[in-house]
Length: 472
Ligand code: GDP
Image (cartoon, rainbow, N blue to C red; front, side):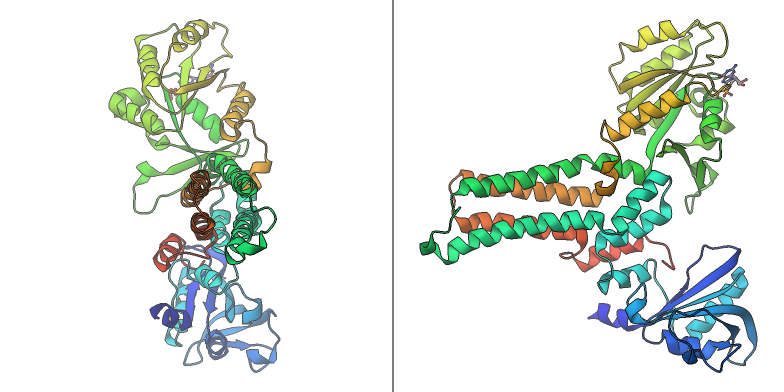
């Protein structure tokens, strides 16, 4: 009930990024959006906005209650049939200064709009049936995409490719249920195919499909969130140089984590479309020696935490006790490890063979390869890229991106649904009747609906949208 009231209110927010820009957009959505716009916007060429058709760019002034000009702007009115939220929406494109935008926003509040909550525009689009839940989630993934491959995945989710798959699974379950129910309702008809062998096979096939999709979860989550990566190595092995090489060519995306200091800057490197989320790179660059200065303990914890460890060795120097220490550390970390033999441009390659021999005994993380590299010349980058692709795609090709699961919540739901199908198979195997098989199948059908949002609790919906940004 409360939800309904909130939904009836007209909301407004600055839709463009905070700070200064060429253009800023204030977005208003809801029943009163158009009347608010009529009161604050005066077109140059006509008396009122109403004289223009919907979705027309109208040039004019934004005026306050005393008719004082706040800004020149373009105003676009979208009626509910053709808007993002399925409500009347007005977008005012003004100059992108923070004062201008705040003034116009405040004016919309005074005219009766209230501040939109994070993700509220998209939440309305979902609640009004414009997007399903997985598409709505993909909106943020498009905005946050770190590489072209991440973007392609997010776009295919947004355009419904992934939802279509899930809906297909649900329809398959419904078809099996209908078949079983027909035999419950009309047992005397002896419907063809009522032997459970056929039903069993159909359920089992579906379960395989779900499990196959689950296999893509790893790829999807990495493409969306980045592969958590730590670079370790003794002082002067070339960690910073390798990192700068990787960060170079304008491939890095740096994002501040709100509310934290510079220490927790997240830096992403795009290697062959795979976003690597580098752990504490600021730390590595500020202190010359991660092991010595931040402490071995911390280096251990980075390596332990990482899904990928890049262990850098200096191929040009004889093995030292510090190298031994790194090898011991590799022995303990659970993620994938790529060994980098750096400084291959220098003639004296004295270390590679010894190190290669030593790390063969590593029992910890999985060593995925040894890459001869030179941070100076760039040698080895392609091999590193190929190894990463092997780790992330695991031999599967790009087809997976369009159907990849990219969210831990969705993964958990899919896993549970596959288990519920397993329950249905058990029910058949122990000789229970149709009614009991239908109960299991119905649970799986309902569970899957949580991905697309057809069967989901309000508080989970709220929680998902609260992670969105304001104005989206
Ligand atoms: P870190 O302490 O592990 O971060 O090492 P740095 O990246 O600061 O590198 C230490 C030194 O080795 C610097 O003088 C670098 O210029 C040099 N260096 C790093 N990588 C290479 C390389 O591939 N070839 C050559 N010739 N020198 C390198």
